[in-house]
Amino acid sequence: MVYDWDGTRTRRLKLFRAGTALMIAIAVLGIPLLFYAVKLHELYG
Image (cartoon, rainbow, N blue to C red; front, side, top):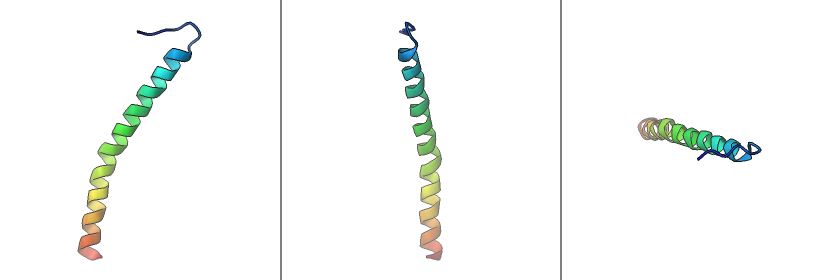
């Protein structure tokens, strides 16, 4: 399902996929870091 008449559809799809992957990566990396920061704050706060 890739349309390439002028490239806009495929580019948008690639951008959407990259954005989704980036959001997932940020969530996967960010949640443990946030949890760790909260733990440190509880210990030393």
